[in-house]
Amino acid sequence: MNKINEFDIQKIFHAWCKKQPYIIECWHVPNGMQATPEACRKMKLIGLHKGVCDYWLLLENGIIAAIEFKTQNGSLSQQQEKFIENLIKCNIPVCIARSVYEATQFVKKILNRVS
Image (cartoon, rainbow, N blue to C red; front, side, top):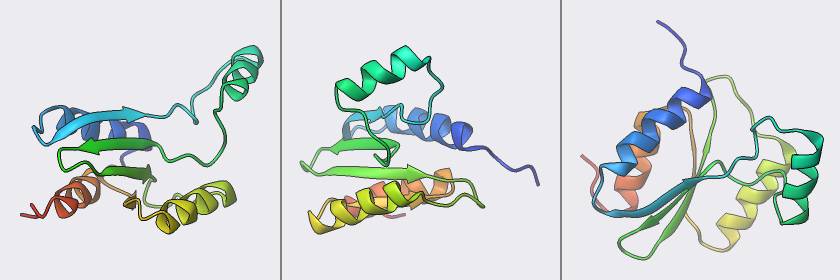
C-alpha cells in the first residue's frame, strides 16, 4: 500500500470540501510552506505564527472548525499541541486527521451527517 503524504491528503480533502453545499467557506493556513526569509518575516509581521491548524471550515450551522493534518507517522509540535488545547478550551471543534476519511467524517459528525 502506498503511503499518502500530507499535501495529497489536504488536496483531496479540499476538493471534497468544495463539493459540499453545507461548507460555506474553507481555507488552508500556509504555515508549512517554503518561503524566502523576507516573505517569512513579512508573514510573521501580519500575524502568522507556528502551531496554527492547517485547515479551517465555516459550516452552514455557523460553526467554525479546524483540522490539523498529519501522515500516519506524523506527530504534533509543541506549538500545535498548545494551539489545539486553546481551541478545545474555546469549544471550537478540532480534529487531527491522518486521512481524508477521518477529515470528512469529522465534518459530517459536526453536522450530524455521519454516513
